[in-house]
Length: 597
Image (tube, rainbow, N blue to C red; front, top):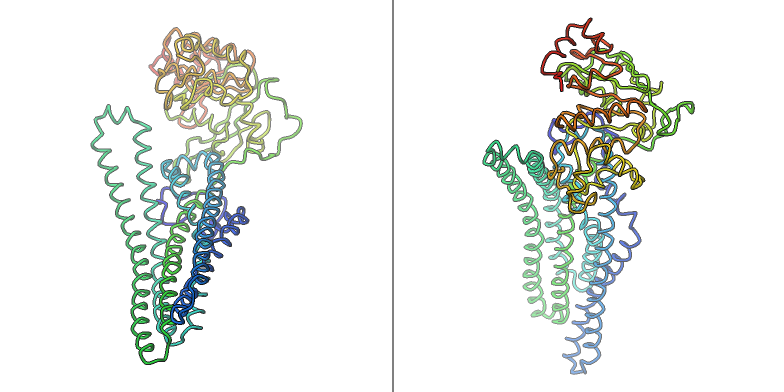
């Protein structure tokens, strides 16, 4: 990728090579080309009407010189001003609407891409920077997609038209003006790339600042409990200062571009006034022609400044597109893919337990990281409870990530119902699984929204059942609006045990054929843990349940226990068999890692 991503943020895999920003801009704009063209044509027509004003002013002066009535030329001038003003307002308005439509299109595409990113990509890239690309970068694109390109083209045509009129009025004054135009052109070719580079750096700095703030809010209580506010504020202030410095640099080049556009035109105005005045004094030029030329030059200041501003904004927009395009090429999942699933195993969800088989699986999270699994093999064949136990870091939770296809196995195969998970359509694979993560996350919103997240078609009867089974009845009763009560950012209004029960209820609501529970009772008190253990055992009578367990009470009732040690399956058996034949399991059962409840 490019230098606006940190080295650690560079994608290891990508969906392709980023397209040139100008190519991408055209791809965005052409979807709304009709409205952009209508607005551009109206703006262009307004500019043409404006070019007529100096010529009418010359007519007014000539009429004054001949002592004729001013009624006709003043009416013409008034009509031109009114028509030009109306066109000048309507054209940009339509282009702004098109610009908002372009931004909406880009944001929808970006949202779809961000939410579908592979887990590995999100684990590696700063979330705050991704949010910045969705918000501030797409907002920068709005002006570029609407007024900048078409407005710049319109201003360019206005300048060419004005130059042609100048040449028609007086070649000597035309030559004086063109020298200044050439100077502006050469200087802008030097300045424009620097505006784009400075804008890229500025947007990256803003993304870094957003990432730091997101980092603080994601562990807000920990920051406060650690009395780390001053330290974190210092880091944020450093990032804010960096954002300010890069913004100042971008502003410097933009301001210089404005000066380069403004100063030469004013110098040309003074030169034309001096040279033209001398020509009028010598009789080589009519005073009306000089006034018309000066008015035309004065009128062209607007299009020239507009063109320079458009070019500056274009560099800013191209920088934003550059950052947006970097997200577009990050590796994303395709939940709509057909996969290679044989018809024989296309069983409707809920009709029976799913079989899981690991065959000599090795896995590591990245090529420069050590292996987590060194050849894991075990089978969980259908209905029943399989407990995964072992020391911390033995690779138990990684088993669930491989089943869910959050990561692909490095070697070996992970099979569900006899088919490698890589061959399953992703939507169907995850549709048959209920998964409760170790930290049991809940999302900002209502309790109902959290429960039905994976089961949007669940009935009230289904909800009532999982609320009862997950022992959430008391919680729902004390909330002011029951299931429709908001539970705060990351469920901050709930206790750890309540969040865990919400996560379990959400998983059960799917009526899964395979239930994965990662330390699902770790934050529950003894009474609720015993109740949820019974829920787990009841579910195991209908489906295949895999649980990462740290409590002896869970393990002793398991139909099968798989003992992990240093990324390998050390032993498989029942509690009684393993206590008798495996030293590590015997030690675990007697230690704090498996405590009786």
